Image 1 (tube, rainbow, N blue to C red):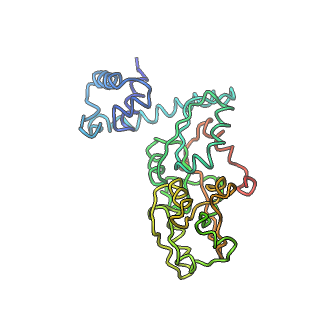
Image 2: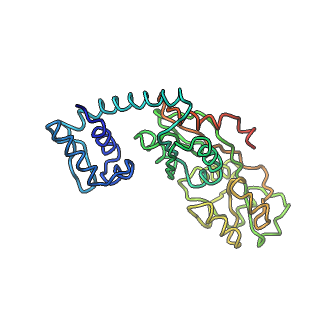
Image 3: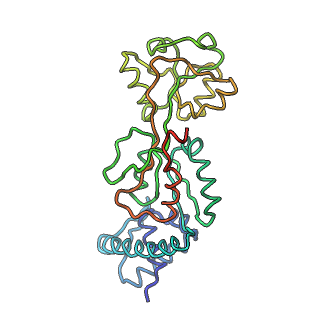
Length: 301
């Protein structure tokens, strides 16, 4: 008799490439995962993995041969369970959401809380990473839906289904630069002041540099940071002028610890997109989550 749990463990180890990661995902111990793999190998009469220092690698004559069929079989079974869940109107399983820390904090947190209130049986797994890693997670079935800062060159296997919200990048300063309040500034004027920007690999940084170049200005930073939170702290303390989405600084702008500079022309808005695998059969739980973003960006503002 076929033991589906053994094949589920095999598939999870193959996808994760690690006994430890697979154990965490399956909520069982690492020895239990190892024992399940050995049991399946004995049952099939062939080794399925090579045990390496860096993790687990499929064998050419065993694991690689059966993986496509195991994936297909488990997908079919998951589809059966999903259809029944949809008929009952009661989603279950796990929803894996990928996004940056800022997107989770400023854009998704309310939606995730509301989703959990409506569908408490769905386990929510949050995967915090940069956009390229989120795309990799989508492709390798470690993530069901990704929220990405745009513009971004997407992999052809991934598609954007929604624009979740628009982000208005603005230049902000602390009270040490109070003489700039209400003053109309250009990109050329900004060159005179120390700028604090995110690191050069981010969409936000690239957008600022391109904005400056389009106006013939060099908006290179005096200080480079790796998070919005650290940027806001440094700007508050007078280290320089920052550039970030207005939505990420609303509290400080409201309290007056930061103020928005009047830069003309303003930076063009950016957007956050919702990405899934192209032509994928989306589970009921995921479709319900995506439905929460179906209203237009203008309606969310």
